[in-house]
Image (tube, rainbow, N blue to C red; front, side, top):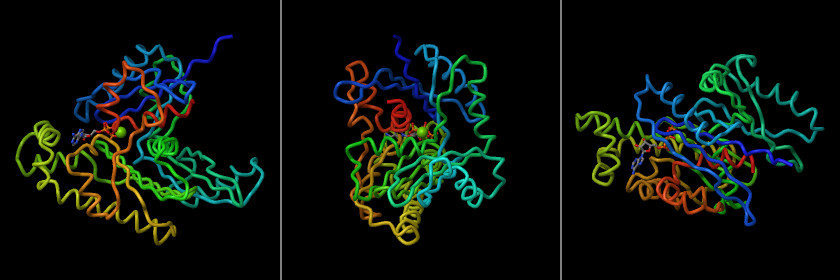
Length: 327
Ligand SMILES: Nc1ncnc2c1ncn2[C@@H]1O[C@H](COP(=O)(O)OP(=O)(O)OP(=O)(O)O)[C@@H](O)[C@H]1O
Ligand SMILES: [Mg+2]
């Protein structure tokens, strides 16, 4: 009998397209294929570059099935508790709740849910996204003979990879911040209680700050930020202060509205988390232990992927979360 081939998880980001598939191994999970292709196109050309790179990636991997993801900033996520009901009734009860939370009609969105636990109550995460955003994503694959097994969101993928990692402990409140080029996603988890927020400040805002103060081109500012992070820190401090305020606002919502317990640890991922000095800055401002997150901590890595994993693990958290869907 032929075994069904694992789908290829594809994370389409502003600065790179990442393809990853995982396989079950005797000791858990291992990388079956991995690639990271940089995208350097300006925003107006980006869609074309995405299409070209994604197609090449699918062809190279010989993938027939894929899992893709929507950016966290386009997806509304809410934590909802329902009384225990038969599983056939969940959807109709949720429909009412979802409409209640949305600022636009239910038929303008597609929505889905994930059950987190069912004990005294059913705790669920519900995600809703505008249909146009989904259609734009699907357009990238319109002419390809490939089946889309799952459309995830970056934030749900991050939740998946966090829950799979040894950092995740029940009864311990963990905050997880992924800072990319154009999006920043924040998750706070305690047992089945979850807060998911998309923040407005990310890597490009830092580059723009250097660009404006130093009066240089964006690409030059980008290089300066990456190569001379430590010395550029004073130029970035006001943008970073704004980011801290956004994080603090979410923490306050978690503490006072959701009545969540105090955060014990902040984990960082995303390319921008590599900014020299950032981890110490957050630790000092938010007064919480801050460490880098390793998405591959529970995943074995064959030697041919070691170099990419060591260098780019922070930029692969979403891809790992997507690929875990099929394990
Ligand atoms: N050493 C570094 N110091 C500071 N910033 C860095 C460093 N390395 C990468 N970055 C920044 O990380 C960002 C890219 O990270 P990542 O690959 O996670 O984003 P993305 O997934 O492409 O974007 P998005 O998810 O926001 O669409 C860029 O803004 C880049 O400048
Ligand atoms: Mg990203």
